[in-house]
Image (cartoon, rainbow over all chains, first blue to last red; front, side):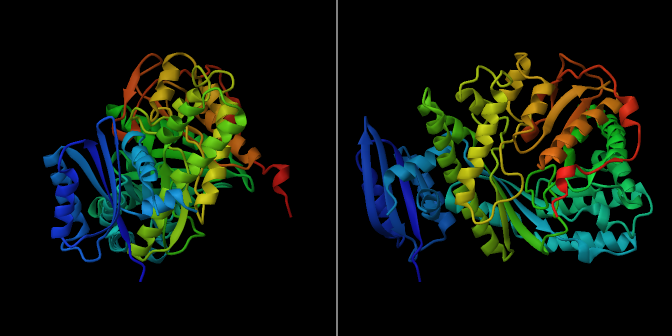
Length: 92
Length: 454
């Protein structure tokens, strides 16, 4: 069965510990990270993680709102989306 | 593998450029609800809608959450009530009862509009359809969520001028019946020529008789996305301009296709079509008029507007058809005045008139839409405006429509506020010369010669 990937994006002002805090949450909730890319442009942090939610401890909606709150605590915006929307738009 | 720049581009479209899926519209056939007793009919209708559509809103919200894209509206369209009520309804008030039932069903499942309070009278009205049409002012003033449409022409059948003349009266009566809210009833009433069976957008949405028992149709939108991308091609050739619009339309439509397939799978209802229309909202940055200005016009309505809109409409279609397995509905650029801040600005600047809007309807996908006119406009003049617009559709083999609001008690220089997605608008002046002797003639205008294709 084809694995559905979830894209987690983190956008905001750069600070120490952003990646650590997000990855700790994901590890604690059974989410496997498949790929990470990240750019910092003039102090602006932009990260994308391709993840596998098939072993996740909670439902998608709960994880999405947990990550949203975590983002508010850290001072960044964290968004969870199915990869489908990006494949639909950028691949034929 | 998807890369970070693609993810950023998509999310920027959603967060900053107003990319959204404008509607998931569930079409439901009411043919199997037909009964010759009005109470039984209303029960059947209520039960069918609340059963088939029970998971629509939740499914829309789930998909929206998972994809991270707003799905702004969940709506329902039904088989034209002029057909469904024909056996049971003995008076316009019987039809109003169906309207109230539809409204109740819409509220029960949580959709914001339900379309299909419709008469398909392209050649002539049956007795039942005339009753429905005459019931419209009361139906629209005693419900909140129903949308009504009257089809009065097609390229194959010609124009039903008896119906057109009647609608001049009905629109004015609807305006009177809702005059305490700036005649808002008229924002829920549209007259059409060549109406498609699968349009997901209101007010003209109905579930056509050629359709299956139920269907999912999706309307996308993204004028803000197109406008934004055009800012990077200022001064470039027409080739570059067209390619840019086409590629952007592709990307926008892909989102609609994805949402439609997901909704269809989760609800277990077949996927019908994606309607790839650029539909504006009153929000800043969500305007079709702004696209025309980004193409190089000082104001919408200036010379060059019709050509620019023709180009835009065509490139949207070209980009969109590659993006979707089934395209239908209206599919093109919408020009509703009250729902587009750029259009409102153009009217207030004196750049845009009803006559220019009429020319623009020859090359885009809808018609004279959401236009506020003086409340004392004669009924015969309203009929004349409808006749003009339907003639454009009939001769050019396209859909055209009129959704016009004569605001009782207001005139040129006044403004109206409809609220929410319906927006606000200045009252536009209407040509003061009369056409009563023309529209009062009675009968129908025959189908044009080029419709004889056999």
